[in-house]
Amino acid sequence: MKLEADMLVGAVADDDSGMTDLLGMFAEHGMSAVMFFEKQPHHILERYSKDIDIVAIGTRARSIEPIEAYRRTLEALRSLRKFNPKMYYLKYCSTFDSTPLGNIGQMIDAGLDLIGGKTIALSALPVNGRTTYMGNHFVNGVRLDRSHMRDHPLNPMTEADLVVWLGFQTKRRIGLCNYETVKKGTEAVTKEIERLGSSGVEIIIMDAIEQKDIKTIARAVYNHKLVTGSSALAMELPLIWKEKGLLSKRKKNKVPIALKRGIDPLLVVAGSCAEATIRQNEYAIKRGFSSFKLDTVKILESRRGYHEEVQRVIDEGKRELRRGKNVIVYTASGGADIMKTKNVGLRLGLSEVSIGGAISNANAEITNALMEDACLNKLIVAGGETSGAVCKKLKLIGLYVGKQVDPGIPICFSISEDPEYSGILVSLKSGNFGGPNFYGKALLFMERQIRHDKFIVAGN
Image 1: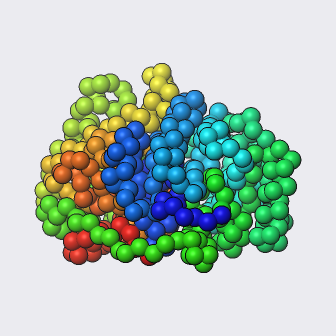
Image 2: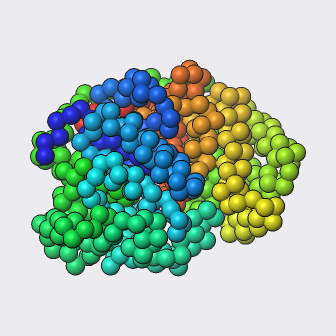
């Protein structure tokens, strides 16, 4: 199969930080990538995706009703189909974030309903400690259902067998290409995928423990029409396409950064309660970042409490940013905060999705007010749900995606019809990704970009 079209990949993700994870992996190999937030008209997609290798749409479909997740995924795929991509890539979390009702199964169902055939489900991401063996998924060597993901506030993972878990979410037949096959090499994997497909299997869970396993699988599926899973394949597919002469060379394109106040402070909004994000918050606070903890109980208890708490954080954040201080707004210091907020919300009759939505919306209001007041051009958002809410509040159309600071966390460049919000350097960080000093590393990266007054969009 020859990849002749300008657009190689059309991607859809179940949240916005997860999409930047995928596109950042592609960008590391010189591929140009742009992601759009959902429901953008086609003329907007066309205007900002000229000469781009990968066009992607984020859906915020991870923690909504399953039927709506299916609809959003299908709508996004139909928008991408107008570009005639050679490969469709459905991106979901490498910890398989979902409930027994969905929504990974609904995403894959939408893809197969539109595109047909069969597909793989590769959730492993060895570079970040996510592995799959005999269909069972592990996080840093701990079985998924015994890891911290068991206590996820929205998508608690209580089953590590991905064949079983995905089977709750779709009526399609699911099979497994196990590690014994993967370690035999690409030819064995190719034959096993074909054998399973011929027997009526439509979704094939892939085992992978090391990066060499990802390479093996990538060589077996580089010309498939539809792939699904983590961002792992994006680390290997560009190398294969280049080797086979399928990836055209492009000149490096640069766009000007919005230099509003030169080297101004950094705003971090950490809605994620993941262990990695909590460690990053603590590390930065110890090194001089000003910090403000959102009282999430007050956010939930009453409308008045919501507005008072949002205004308090805005006022205190403005004061510190005007002093030139880097600022972190965060929601949790540990598991006790998470359980307290969840219990209060449930006692008030709120669903877990509504609890998360209220907190994300509060963070979005705070971000918008602080960005506007301080004319900031550097922003980090931690957490997929928070990222979606913030980008919507800022009225961003999308992001050009650049190189990574840590695996799965690139620096991006905002796209907006409003000049006040176009040209901001943004990082949408999946909660569980990044080392303790991620914020500091990202700040240095952003400041280097600002000094050069350019953001590299493409070029291999």
